[in-house]
Length: 72
Image (tube, rainbow, N blue to C red; front, side):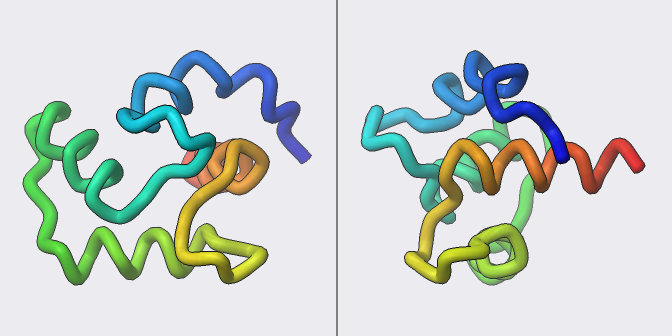
């Protein structure tokens, strides 16, 4: 499993409101900034996929796991 600390800087850039969680809206903003427009529905789908504790947002450990899944 990935060390979440190696993703902290990126996570904090995405976590625009600084609450320690990435919401679907923050994920959508990230993708837009990267030139990849995604729908609200797709943003929710990605969050649901990554959200291991089912709180509706992505925590740092969940973000690290998501990033590692894209590296594989």
